[in-house]
Each structure stands twice: as C-alpha cells, then as structure tokens.
Length: 294
Ligand code: AMP
Ligand code: MN
Ligand code: MN
Ligand code: MN
View (cartoon, rainbow, N blue to C red):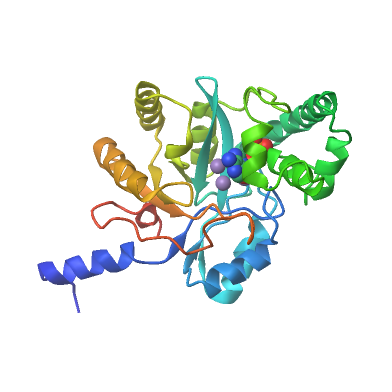
C-alpha cells in the first residue's frame, strides 16, 4: 500500500520523529562510568530504538556499542563528540553515522587526545599549588581509558577527596576559567572537526548549543561557518537544555535550515540529570537528523 493521503503522510512523518532516538552519551572509554554494553542495555530498557555512543575524542567503544545494540535489535549510528576551540572557547561537535575505521577521523582524534595528557599534568600542577596534591594520579584512577583523561575525572577525584560535595560544585569552584585547575587549551578547529566527520561518511552536529559562553553575534558566526563547512544539524533536545531552550534552539534550526538532533548526554546514573531515552520528542516541524540515514 502506498502512502497517499495528506493525513497518512503526516502520520508517517510523526512516527519517524517519534522514534525514541538518543544520539549522545558517554562510556568508560571517555568520561562516562558505564561500559558500552551496559549503556546499550540501559538505553534499550528505557525504550531507545536508535542509539549512538558519542565518547569524547575517541572511537574505542564503537565496535562494542554497535555489537551490543545489534544483539538487542536496536538501531545504531557510529558516533563521536569532538572538542574544538572556537573564538577562544571550547565547543563540542558531534559526528553521527561515522565509519570508525576511517583514517582521517582516527588520526585527527589521536592528535586531539595527545593534547589531553599534557593538559592533565598542568591541571594537576595547578591543583597542587592550590593545596590539592596527587590529582593526576587521582584522576587517572577514575579514567577507564588512560588515553582519555578529562576534567570529569578530576572532578570525581575532588568529590572523592571531600573537597567538593558533587560534580556540579566542582565545576563552579575548580577546573573552569578563573578558578584553580583551569588550563586554557587549544583543541582542533571547527573546520577540521567537520572535515574529519564528513571524511568518515558522517553528519556533523553542534552539541548542546545552549551551553557555550558565546554572545549572540559569536553564535551566529558559529552557525554560519558550520553551515559553510557542511555542518548538518544542531542538538535541540538535549539533557543540557531547559524547556525554554528547546524552543529557542528549534527556532535556530529552522532559521539556518539545520536538521535537529536529540540526545541525553548521559554519563552516569547518579551524576546525570537526564537518563538515556528520557527526553521529550523533537518538535514536529523539525527534520530529525536520523532521516539523513537509511
Ligand atoms: P574536558 O573535555 O576534559 O574539558 O571535560 C569536559 C567534560 O566535563 C564535559 O564533557 C562534561 O562531562 C564535564 N562538565 C563540564 N562542565 C560541567 C558541569 N558544569 N557539570 C557537570 N559536568 C561538566
Ligand atoms: Mn563529558
Ligand atoms: Mn559536550
Ligand atoms: Mn557529551
């Protein structure tokens, strides 16, 4: 039977938009606390039927995530979240539908990770000067992958040491601009990240656009350049956005002709406010990024 009437077409569109897709989360391979297999199971149990593991700057969890998803009968898109520097600020670009074997993407990420090691030593030196010794070893203890030390691992160490009550508190008093343990770092460029993702056959998505310390003009410039380089989408529904931000970033997506993505940014059952799959659907009038994949 062909889909012919306007109302049938509408119903079809709505059902695609209403797939429970969660296209942003982290495993122990970056700064999450669950394995790719545990995440797959948790996503599936929460109703997710299209999933992507998007570890920071690393592809080491992709094969495991894909296999676990397949075993559960859940659709999977290869994913990554790349750290970039834009106008002096850190911005995150998610790549979806990527081939994790692609050498251009892999090499770009290897270089990105090498910068993390030196930065971690500098963070530790600063914390030491602030009276917090052994932070490098402490953070490393929390890192599931020594190749990927992130501020999240330092944050968990500061909580463990009783220096801060929780992770949110750490990111108010440490590891951020103007506070002990902040090391300004130069990541890849926007153009490089989009190029790596596209070289690997993926679509580039601006992660949680509501989180950046950029003014309206700078955000416009980010969207324009991202579009010029071939960027495809922005996250509209994410664990980092408030309901008001769902509305404002839906407008941004429409204005620039971006597709929209949806992802919890889940890291850990206790730390993360939003669980896998537990987000509102994308607004009906936006084109879901997953319609770009077969
Ligand atoms: P890094 O890539 O090493 O700079 O670490 C960035 C990570 O720190 C993010 O991916 C988050 O997981 C975490 N993070 C940053 N800011 C916050 C915050 N305010 N609350 C909780 N986690 C945060
Ligand atoms: Mn993270
Ligand atoms: Mn992010
Ligand atoms: Mn993330």
